[in-house]
View 1 (cartoon, one colour):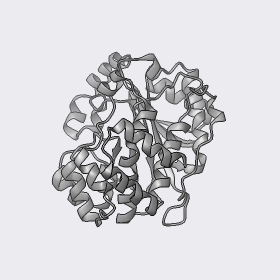
View 2 (cartoon, rainbow, N blue to C red):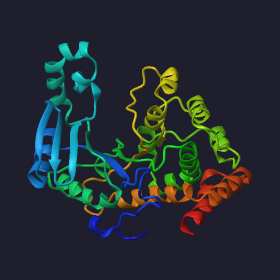
View 3 (tube, rainbow, N blue to C red):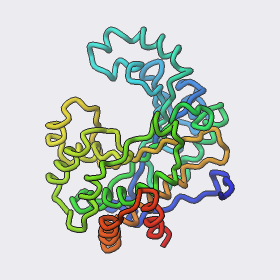
View 4 (cartoon, rainbow, N blue to C red):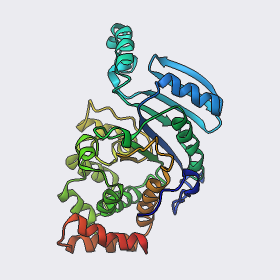
Length: 325
């Protein structure tokens, strides 16, 4: 196994399509979970290092506006601790109780740091955030074996047409056995926090070189097979953005904020490890983008998958050759 490198020594790969349909550099938002310092202590440390103005939303949720690397927020990752976000009725009744409970729960409930979208060619800047978190004693996956601390990427889709949406999901499901192997969650983390893979029958449908539906059919097929946020590539925010009414007809009460991004969920944020970087996980996502951008190779990989008779771990070895080519 390769030795761990310092975060600043690992390059963030660029996707094959760097600009969106408007000619602007595509963006990506990042979410990191950790425990240790409070949300307030964390946002104060970020402000000290990066500048900006702090806005308190409640005793356990803070925003940092105008920092050197953009806006970000830090909050305890539990909706019950933020009553103003959970509905007006609760917001009138629970603030003091929620604040008290939040202080008690801060030793058990992780904090979540969320960045505003940053240009994909500036992802390296976010390593400063990891350095700040380590300096104030933030802990991650390796410090809590019974909890999966998440790392999430929210990359902007390059085009909002049906072919692009389908190509990305096709690429992801074909590469997912390899992606999950590389992430290598142990059994405990898989049980506690890793999202479920896409259903096998749906993967086979996606893999077909003949499956290139229009947006309405794609959304209908997706919702029929995946009426849930519990996927490692969660498309519901994107589909909600593309056709809110169609999504809400199936999931009227699901918490979904529509946006033109994918939501790629990873179960491993090793925040306190000085050798940990987000770059390897991001670079594996770029492998998804590269396959999605190559229609001929994508169709060939799909056809090969449909004739493959081995287990996922064996397919991971096959598809890895495509990634490494």
